[in-house]
Image (cartoon, rainbow, N blue to C red; front, side):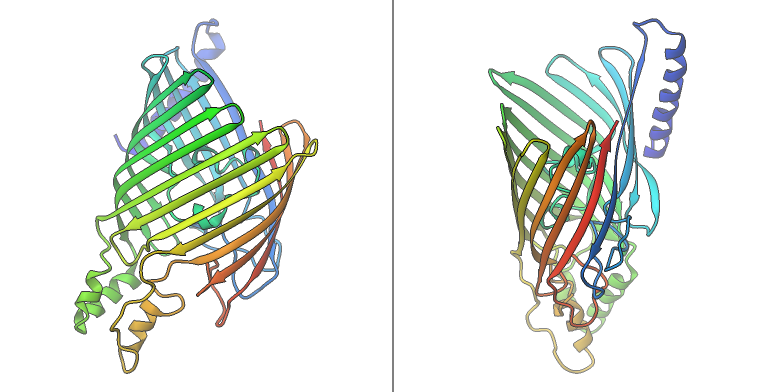
Length: 402
């Protein structure tokens, strides 16, 4: 069954369950509806580049805009009995297309085997990061947005496949393990990334105010629907630079992403940190190490916080032996230049913010990021010639759940 048909089937089942519930006894199927959203305004102090979240086609300059940090999601769970349930989640936001659009973020069936084990089949959140399952739920996070230094390294929100869930308590410590496999297609403004043979491991241990998480993901990925890149590779081979083209495979590339993180919410102190390593077999997706650390202190309903994030590239940022003059110089510039294919988007960020839980299920956040690109434009898009930064990013957001 294709994912589209699977989503349609789950939606039809949800609608049918509403009808069943209307005349059912207490022991019949039940339906739970919940939702979340963020209404935000974002701006920067420059018109020389656009600030975006991962996968977005356009961003924000000095003029305040709603599209960067705003979203809305709704989730329905149909519990058929103690063993079988169905969950669907729809999400509206701006991403690879420069307007708001709805997408099926989750659409899965869950089968409870016993008190410890469950199996899910369908579309689930990809457990790539520490807060993967709720990264889009602003209310569930201290910061206004996840730090880009880490959270733009793998542009994968969900996958189609199956996973096995294990949950058990050992004294005061609860352990959760998720092992998933499947595939996914991610549409970006310039191309599509196809993930195949993905295997993802997500391990979380919780004890009182402490949480420790480890994650490992691997997949074969392909970069498709990018005529500019395809033309460059063809040209490299035509002019005798086939060895350079061989360093940039675009099909069935091996990739891994390993991360570890933790949180502490003890008394009034809130800490969160995450460290990640991306490794691939192509020059087009560079090897990177990235991390962030956040600290906050709660004063009643107010939680001021600060975080620092950084990313470094572990693979070479240029290809040696490329011609620097003559008719082939533009090809070298495309690979080794300031925005060259060999260069990851490097930057560091310092951010201060304030969260105010002023009402039940509502939180107001204000955040200022000071972002310093390194050897290029960083994560900014459409930079003007000579753009270097740093850039201040301002945002105010109202997070809610229901």
